[in-house]
Image (cartoon, rainbow, N blue to C red; front, side, top):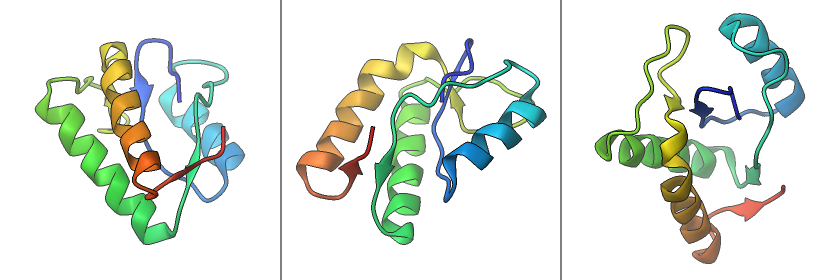
Length: 97
């Protein structure tokens, strides 16, 4: 999700509900934009999310937010795309949007 100053990488069973809740707790923007979404089993999505977070942190993209530790600088976008496309190529994730 795009939060104007950062990108949030996370998971949700119901994207619209999650977006509404994040808008409320972040206080950052009126409507965070869902940039992309992917699907797989819950465990695969969780494991993949954790791997992506670790990689983005290791590369120094962590963005300091007081409401979550899952925000990354906008500069992470190219790396994030490479990671996600790799998971799609491997058949780990299926892209929805």
